[in-house]
Image 1 (cartoon, rainbow, N blue to C red):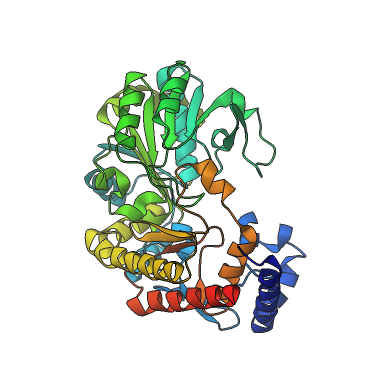
Image 2: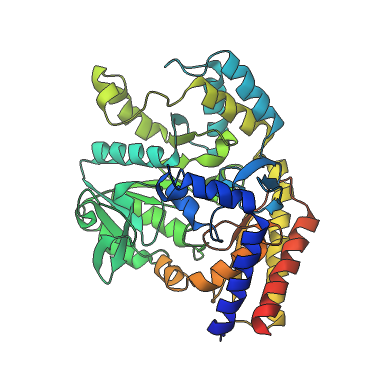
Length: 447
């Protein structure tokens, strides 16, 4: 049992410590509030712990320094956007060289050929297209699925996350499909566009797809944005069998699960999707995403892709596939996110999980730590099997305290959930420092 009064007092003390340590960030936050909605350039930046966000000065490798000169071990890494580590020299050089030679021209570049070949090698799917973000890539793929099948509805997992795609911001309320809490201004009733099924429930998926109105199932191979929820043994193979039997395209979103290895879970677990989406990490920090498809899907899409109306097809974007993005992806995938990089990062995540689990066991807490590749996080509950169970277990007061306690001691976690991401730039000492800080927070809370 958590003493909520003690938790509130500890949080108040951490808030005071945070404010005193960040006067320059406080000043910038006040000024930003005069011109930026909510005082930030993107809404979820308000989710950081503390009275205001810390403002970035610079970051390199696994270290981040804010405008007050406070240095952090960065276990957030841009929520996978900087999974490679910050400021990769090869990416910096490639971006600078490409910027001097022209950034965008609506023409393909030689780097694009290399990128397509490398993505094919990593994920095993033979045809690729580019996007500016995984949200865009998912949106395009859903259009393709509806076009190819003639079916208007798509299916997702309960409490999934696939960016800001309207159709995916849906959850189950009993048997009803309703907008996900927090979704602003849905353009249509999501029950009209989307079927929702619980993760790890193959019978529910089979029953829903049997209706015959679903074009594709868009899913992560392991849920991540509600916290890591791993698939049961045999579940993903059963998903593939059910989708094939009901003639439903299977789309795997690897944007966050790329942490499993160079080809994400698709390669690591031998998955056989019809289409796959990968986003943030592949550009080393430059906005870019990609989506791949089987030869069969590509052949069926080739004709509309070559027609005169393709520029108003709902797929594309003037800056998509620009030369700068292609240069960044080539530099990133040729120097990072390789097998040798995961060989360093994954053991660090294992060390993190072992350290946290040791603290939990020492204090006999009913908590759990979960890991997927080089990504790990802890839960204030036993491991959930579904997104709904994970959502129900969220304890914002407790998470906020642990995040702020860590931030005040130089450890930057992802602002939502308790996620830590590791790159080859982290060290065992970084991991041990987090374990020490986590243990300190638990001791204070348990005192």
